[in-house]
Amino acid sequence: MDTQTLLVYFAKASYLLAAALFILGIKRMSSPVTARAGIKWAGIGMVIATLATFAITGAHNVGWIVAGIAIGVIPTWLWGRKVAMTDMPQMVALFNGMGGGSAAAIGAGELLKFSQPGAPVPPIATLALAVVGALIGSISMTGSIIAWAKLDGRMDKVFRFGGQQAVNFIVFAASVLAGLALVAWKLDANLVIVFFALALAFGVLMTLPIGGADMPVVISLYNAFTGLAVAFEGYAMGIEALIVAGMVVGAAGTFLTQLMAKAMNRPISNVLFSNFGGGGSGEAIAGSQKAIEASDAASLLYMAEKVIIVPGYGMAVAQAQHKIWELSQALIKAGKDVRFAIHPVAGRMPGHMNVLLAEAGVPYDLIADMDDINPEFKTCDVAIVIGANDVVNPAAKTDKSSPIYGMPILDVVDSKQTIVIKRGKGTGFAGIENALFYADNTRMLYADGKEAANQLIAELKAVEGGGGH
Amino acid sequence: MSFVSFVFQSLLFRTSEPRGKIMIDGFLALYIFMLAAFTGKEIIGRVPVILHTPLMSGSNFVHGIVLVGAMIALAHAESPLAIAIGFVGVVLGAGNAAGGYVVTERMLEMFKSSKDGKK
Image (tube, rainbow over all chains, first blue to last red; front, side):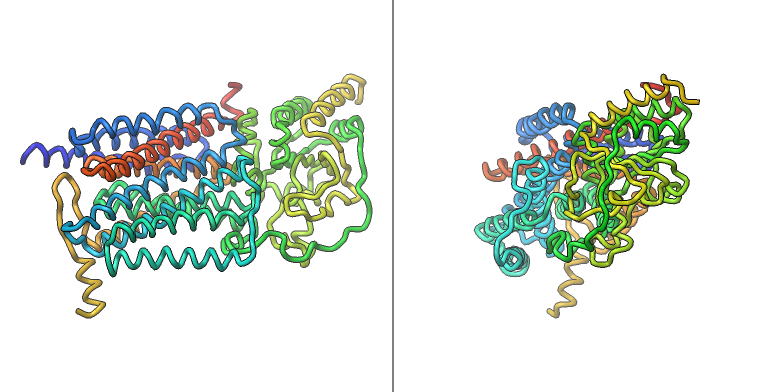
């Protein structure tokens, strides 16, 4: 066996090991206890696979390879180190777009190589998957960049024009036709360029009309897209590690996208092809919102035994999570049973709120999922809603004309007493009035989230200091 | 040649190239695709909602393995255009892997139980 063959076997064995480490790593990430080890396992797999690849590449273009890795790794590493936790969704979108772009670049390289005069004709399965992978990767790249720009506040949230869906369909159909032509008709370099231009344009067009509220689903979808693109390009190049890792991510991402869409009661087709809140605006609500002062709210908390805190993204925008945890610690010290109730889509990605609370130091065992906490509201003395709106709106259960009808919600309305911390009387993301805010046992504490938490901490101290029982 | 036999022939087409690029039998590849897809679904099915964001980020990191493909593509590139495309692929793939790892690790570092004590 010559040295070259030995090196290839060495690299292939390393890929096998890396693929196993990826799967075990993701599996360990499925529990909070082992999650930290999980990402490290996957990281070790990545380092092994990357180093072993040098055994295949040899010395040819090695300078370019090393320079490319350095240029790719150093800025993203430094940026990823310091980015704020609230900005995580757009970072994931951006890194995902880079992966999609990389898969598209592999596809472009393969297709251009095949299209050279005198090049051997590739097997049709190889060619077809190279084309499909390039198409999906290109859409994922430009789509993720638009998603990043929207979440980062660099672009108007929604961009619509007349006949947009027709234009999108035509561009998509044209890119598919160009891809088909490459596979079945003619491998022409100009056609390859047209194909990529159409695919990249479709990624942009597809994402432009989608609003910020739906972005989590879109990022998750593009994450799955990139996984599939990597798997298909892996087949075209004959690298098993790409096939396995890409397909695992593609399937996991698709499943996660479905979970998210289900939690938001928005079929994926709705997210992609229609507008939010297009239907009725729901029934008008009788009654009025009843305000409360921080001192009275503190007394309610002082007398409560069981307190459930329901944070929404508004809390994170107000940077109030540290203060809320301080308030919770004060309540726990006073002997109250304090839990956090998290809606599956609280924050801007599923689980984003958990990350933000974890950053503030809230232990994960105080944080409860919707299904676990919902029966608990009946025995809850005071529920504190901060920065959440649509996810606690009882209209989702009772009002068939409401655009959010059918969306699973947190049953805060069952709580004996509710305090809603809110800056003003405005409506939520979906622009719908919230009956919970008008309920007889709900009191509104109108203040900025951080300020309100501060006041409650101070007032609670005053109540405790002033005697009580 | 009928369409069906055309498809079958392409699926059964085997060849191998030098430098480690080995074409995989079409049906075997379909099995790998299928099994990997089930694995992905099974793995994520047991994940609690609190870990969905780190998990999305973690799976985002895992498809950074595309870097390996881009490295091999660049190593085979001859023309300046092919080198340029391969280089872009390596830069983007490396960015995906490095960025994905850093943000996932940072998020997971923060998940602590109340039994772990104060940090």
